[in-house]
Image (cartoon, rainbow, N blue to C red; front, side):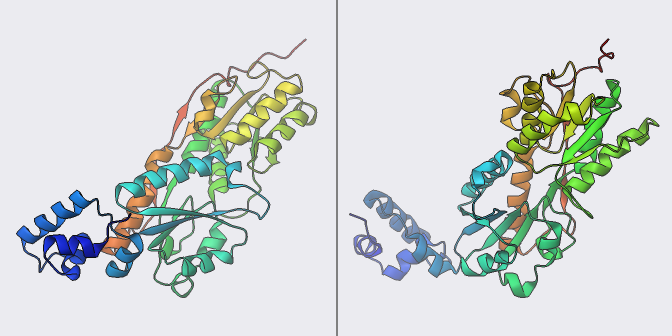
Length: 342
């Protein structure tokens, strides 16, 4: 049976209000001796404060929502990157006594509705288009503190963190160029204007400019899924017979491309090298192991939580997004360009 606040008060010989103040951290008017006594008796009885009661007392829910785009028919498990970030955010929030609520949002208009209806202290947006993030206003988000991950929106209400996408793609392309590749496909979601994929596309092109090489106009617009990567890999040898390398904007897409190429009879990396972006655990689980850009999602998640809690508890946030460094991790899916087959 659950131990009640009344039982602790009776055992300690104090009022229920005093016990409530001690349990909820409102201790300014409680003597040190009483605090110790109440805490000791609560521990002996196994008293666990009610989360809902604590929320009412402190006027804070200690709930943080993680909102991610998801069509009605899709599972959030479809994105390993999303789930990896979600797990890391939950771990960070748990350290500070906050709880995470994960919600897939099928339509951008539902973002504001979700923020207003959950009694959240804060929310983290992951994977939304900059156009969608930019539309959020003080009126639509209310009192909820909001941080955006991987956003290039200039909305001051959502300042958050992102990886150095430009540099990451530049490192990937430079690696392939140094291996002698020149016919390289850029594979990723269709884009327009500023955003994550646009930045990676620009960084990819800059690597060619760095060495005085002409950037090939080889762009394949595919969604960030294993299935679409595999489909691209299957048709790539016939569609681009002279291509010797592929840069994919996400690891899950790159893995699909590798498997599709293999099924089509193309060897990786002997015939075509492949580079991904993320450095998820799966890079070590596939054959060949995937060369990729590491964007340090551990630091990105912890930075997002730090910014959010700073906003919630101190009312402070950085004026500019915090950029997380990237690096190239070389594995087995890339090799020097092979001489033409006779």
